[in-house]
Image (cartoon, rainbow, N blue to C red; front, side, top):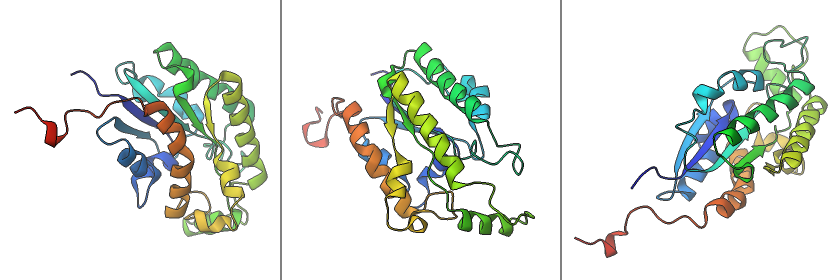
Length: 226
């Protein structure tokens, strides 16, 4: 029968943890059961510098066959402050260039731009994240992620996506428009169950648009030809 259509989830810890609890990745897998293989390529701690270095391993040519959609979810680590987190920080211009490199890589292996779904980095709750940093024993009195800084990365992500003709999930504004950001973040940076469900709700219409034409794989039990 050949390769089933694939939906690939490419990102940092926000993708790697997408099956935890009421995870957004799990919701997509449930939505696409018996239609697509959902493949998680999330790498905790990665920024777009790391991502472009591993494109040939994470999104190799054999994987990028019969692709229905790819979610691309980076920026939360790129937006770290350079003076506090030099290893994860990526300058804004480099972040923009890296997103373009990811698009180019996918397109060169035959994935059309309209199948690329970029998710903006989410807003950060600085107070919660500083508490998490102190729990890790880091000697800081301020968060290495700032709301206003991360917003610039979300804006650049949107600019690149709109210019390229890809799809964009505005998680930034979806979360900023909630009554209390803390209700959607487990530690100020990562999504809790409510945050994951909100993201899943944002992505679902786009995934349905790209996959509604796909048939169910293999016959239903009540029409199976014995």
